[in-house]
Length: 259
Image 1 (spheres, one colour):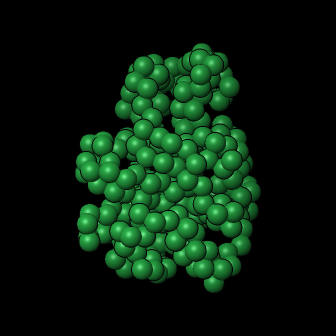
Image 2 (tube, one colour):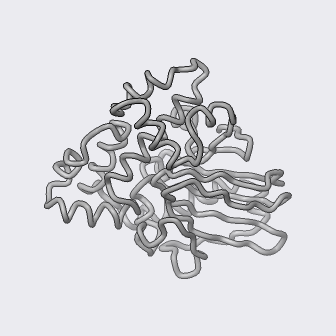
Image 3 (spheres, one colour):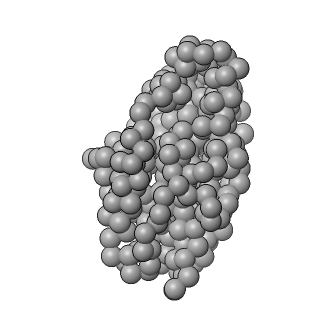
């Protein structure tokens, strides 16, 4: 479990860790805004307001989006790993990019008896059970597109897309089509997003790593190249990011979440 300025980040059950990154729970929210940065993932978000429950599916974004929040509201969300929303959401990932939709007709599974009592009890346990049951019926296997995604993630995006296409094992055109449908953005854009996400983690490191070192470490052509990509995705420069001390909860430290 990881505490964040905007809530609590909780890992899923071990049976779900290949498909679900984490859960996010925020009770009696005090923030007026949620900062969503590009991450290549799809989120299922619930807002509890008394007896009313609103649920939406948010696609990945290609630029920073500031999402208004209800102060005093209760929120719970599920972050699917890149490419894994296909097991749970009817729409392809590219249909949701840079937008959101109400969940009616979009979910491949039943939410179960979802009430505010469940939220205030153990909603994580509830969704572990719901998602595990659904996944057991599907018995999904590792696909070539998953291997391509994993390759880009393992290299922090600093690898030629052609290598990911080679892992996919079909034509480059077919690879690009399947990748876009599965992740929501082209492979080249996803690689930039993954590299950007790792850049934010390094910038937030207490060891105060230099910008020049980060640029070289992540295989940018130079520091200017890194700053340009960073500003396009985050809406602010790396130096402004360091000074802002913004807690971007949608991409927590993975080791901290899982242990």
